Length: 115
Image 1 (cartoon, rainbow, N blue to C red):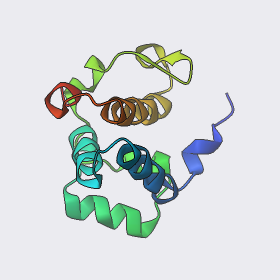
Image 2 (cartoon, rainbow, N blue to C red; image 1 turned 180 degrees about the horizontal axis):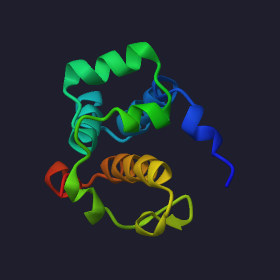
Image 3 (cartoon, one colour; image 1 turned 90 degrees about the vertical axis):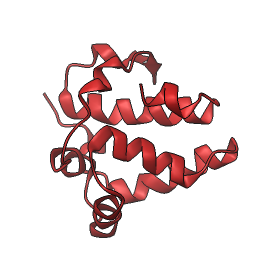
Image 4 (cartoon, rainbow, N blue to C red; image 1 turned 45 degrees about the vertical axis):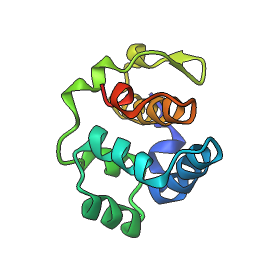
């Protein structure tokens, strides 16, 4: 199966879009960072280092210290596809993050987002 272009896209190039989406809805960069840390296990310093190194999405998730075991509780539709039904592991991790940022932008409470 062909690899998706997003796998080689720099996480640091997409990150500002996550921030902008959240801030347009009155949420903060700190909340987006908290979501990313919850999902991946990166510390804030490790997250910032990944951004500085301009790691691609595939590497960003492969190098994640501890993917949260509760992430399989993330359910719903993103880009017309149910996240729980995505079979490719890297794509599922990317869509989990997209879904969490969407929930943040829709005003969901952090304690509900972080399951």
